[in-house]
Length: 440
Ligand SMILES: [Zn+2]
Image 1 (tube, helix red, strand yellow):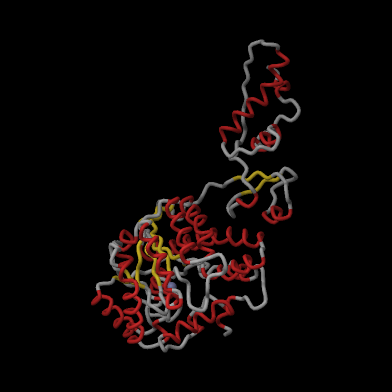
Image 2 (image 1 turned 180 degrees about the vertical axis):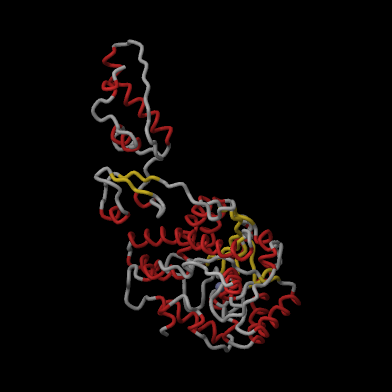
């Protein structure tokens, strides 16, 4: 067969299978490569068949450089390459400006988090009631956020997630505790996290210990159903003096609780205030940007913190991730889980993570700053944790600015209320993720 006969008008060029299919099927989009191939054959053979009047057709079609199907512009991940039919490779900026331009998104092979194989990760949630002084925006509630998160966990096969609940907000909203019933019914667990969510750094150990007991008393009906009694230090701050840490650790041992560290976080609360602003302003574009950046920041943070842990331990320990029970997490954490899975993450229980000696042995660094266990181990070993806190937080803070709704105005009162509730003094400089908080 003459090759030119096949190359009729509108026949696709190599490498643009998705676009050809779309042109010839009047705008229909398929997300399956097999569809593209089948339809491409149909497109190629139809005119030839007409011309040959029933003669036997032998067609050899060579597809060059077949790519995955196009995705909508908002689904483009930072690691994707975007090809535009209007010109050479276009940048993501073009996506925002181009309206209905037809793109071809080439999904680059996902780079696994670790070169040594899949990373095992236990997901944990903190603060399902948020914090007194930092309320849920309209249309959001602890039960709603918990349901969204449990749905995302079910979709991505995340087992037995512990929710570490500080309980000060339930003084004003006792009915919020019912959200823990459905949480446990969905196969997840509850852990202790102090009542007031003050830092052990901000006052003496004794009132902090009383505050732990108050929290454990309120949560006992749900904690009693968990396979393990876990406690998480508020802010993952284990005390600015070893003697304070020792006093609390002894108390936990007496009460039969195991302290659960965090090995990877991505400063998810720093996305919350901007996200609330986009909700208030109805800024869909800003909200979509935050959603995309939330997931990519989670992956990149895991990548850099896992690299630091690997350098410390000479292997990949089982990791423990933190996410907070906030509206932004309720809406967007499913994307984070999908991105983790695409990068070779396997989800495991906290019990499995805690069986790893890297998580059982307490990092030998006493610090008053906001540092997770990987950061503390890295500091001890003299290893850098790249891009932590992530630089992108500077951009996150600039999204959808509204006067009187910056991070300091929205979250600052909660930090002060937490400290006051145990007679402690909030020390803004401990939370060294945030220049705004530092200026307070
Ligand atoms: Zn917390």
